[in-house]
Amino acid sequence: MGVHPSRWMVFSLPLLILSLAVLTTLPLTNAQTLTWAPVKSPTSSELDSVSCVSASDCWAVGRSGTIIHWNGVSWATVKSPTSNNLASMFCVSASDCWAVSLQGTIIYWNGVSWATVKSPTSNILYSVFCVSASDCWAVGKSGTIVYWNGISWAKVTSPTSSTLYSVFCVSASDCWSVGGAIIQWKGASWAAVKSPAFTWSVFCVGASDCWAVGLGGVIIHGNGASWAKVTSPTSNELDQVFCVSASDCWSVGWQGTIVYWNGISWAKVTSPSGSEPYSVFCVSASDCWAVGKSGTIIHGT
Image (cartoon, rainbow, N blue to C red; front, side, top):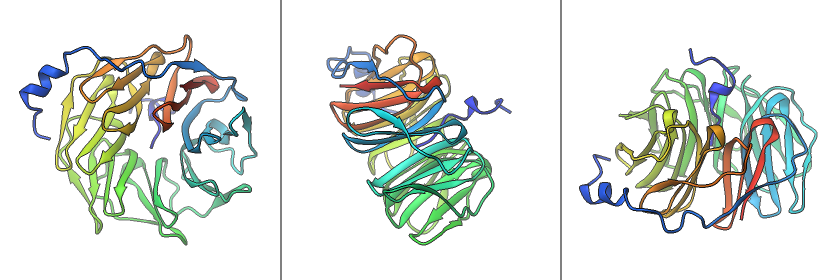
């Protein structure tokens, strides 16, 4: 889970088999399984990450330490322990959530309040993901990788100096991070993997079924060992990708772009007028949230 950095700064698988290439030209039959509609937002701040524990327990974070919460009825602002720009968040449970910032700040929700936790870096952190309460990763600028063992956060040796914008784990011994490079964790160390494109976000359905999206609408697929480009229905930048299952994935991005994977191909989906989502999270196949520019909140049902 991560955040598209171009909003914060100036930009300083073997090939798919022929049969799949043919299938990707076929029209979608289930791209409209959800209808997206705007929901009243309690903030006009940029929202860069959303994470849910259940249908009645979701969080979103963004600029100037903004934190908002969904209780199943409405979204409301929640007191934040920082004014730093929060780039990414992830919840393990209703009383165990993390958020990281562009100043290296790390904050934690214990079920009652948010508080700052000692960070081992002042580098920008773009993404955080947890396998469990004692197994979390965060990544960021210049290949920065930090790890939570249940007691404290510490730096971990990185195989790249390229900035990493997103991290996702299939299991404790199978994690991916993408950005200017693609790296994989196999339980002992991180190692670089050949990358076919620059990407902002990564999500895996399983060990051999991963997606990453990024610049120019690029979409790449990983089979657990290598990555290859897949036909994209958009040239707009895609900021984040989220999958409910192998045949049910969403990606959102610039100019209100929403695209959907039905297991065969990716296609554009109608987005509410004026919305520009940066982050997407699904509680289930019929309950998805996306947040973004100027406090945008849209709900897919």
